[in-house]
Image (cartoon, rainbow, N blue to C red; front, side, top):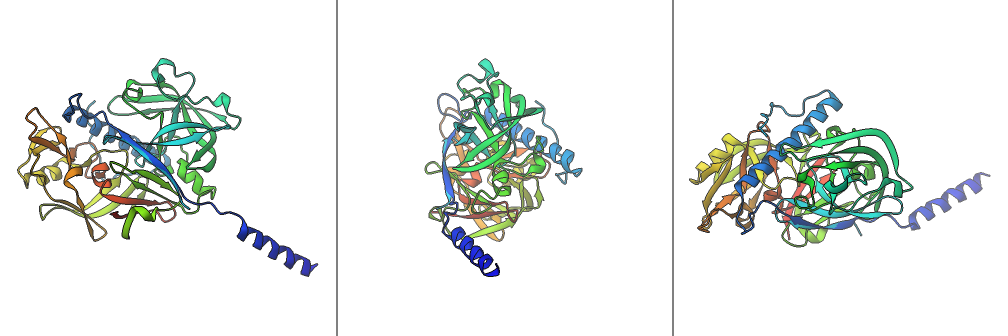
Length: 404
């Protein structure tokens, strides 16, 4: 009997070795923007609305964190502003949102989602959404044999007035081919105008932050994949650029970066929040030792208004209102952000957010002031388009490497 048991164990071990192991996959990403006017100029009012929306999103998550954990997420009180491995290609929404594809249900149905590391929850438009969701692909839980109602409702609201509300379900979700079973998702019965197809090119939103900032009290899709051991590594990574953008699921894509990663520990498991060393402009360090959230759902780099004012004062830029600054298009400064002892330079192309005014000679800077997040900085697309970024759920860290 003992000899048989040993033989059986050896056979099972050999079978496990020969079975195909999950490989990381990529999802192509695209991006679309509503921050420009019809004639191609940057619209400061739209930028201010985007800043307000970001503040509202992160404040809402902070409130969920306190509700879920009993601890305040932010050290200072924000001021509310009034009113192989797998990859997924991303679509560039012209510096506002990054879109990829995901499959939901049994049989699986494909949807376009906004990939957002600055939130956790996942929602799609449902069959009772009606005209408000016109132009979006509709998720119908009644058409999925794996969908289960949770008997709970959800509402997400943003400072710019965007809102989605509906019912919570669980269903099977496929991200880059990896299967998350019984994933919690919101099925919207109402989208506000901010989520209309005219303003929001994706069908829904997929958060990629931690469970503690979930308003559902649920794991993100990727956290579910990790907990169910469905991915080869507990890592996802982004390349965000004008072309070739992707979300890589289950590891990192070595073809898209060179040199070692600089890893920073997450200081609080809510958002992907890290501590940076310094922010400099034209060789002068203006900001030292700052706390920042790494957020693919934010277009700009945001900082407290006082620090941002000091940055722009060093190059004599002009505030055009609401923490947004202008400067000559042909005089983009050299901006560096130092993380983990390594300085990353913002290219002039990414720091220059676009032309402002009819002269064509004045542009807006990609760093803006925010009144709604205390002393926190937000490292959004203006920074992330200069680096390859890896998010490690296994050891709660964020890594940055140079793009190829």
